[in-house]
Length: 71
Image (cartoon, rainbow, N blue to C red):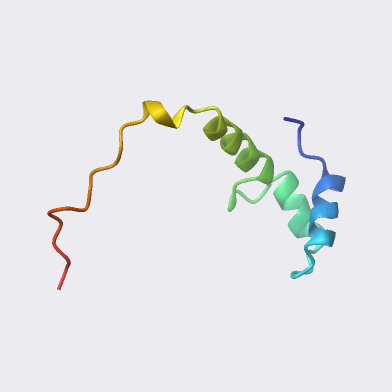
């Protein structure tokens, strides 16, 4: 996977223009300085790690049988 480039993110924001992104918002996604959100590159890296996991090796989660709803 290639490292995220600001121009790439600007292109994505332009194509999905349901929200107008400020320069500061795009800069924060590319290179987080405020420590409030995860950088977009970090998210892409984590998704890449998940993609490499063989889900067949992970046991299933506990079933819902026997669980009682909260009243």
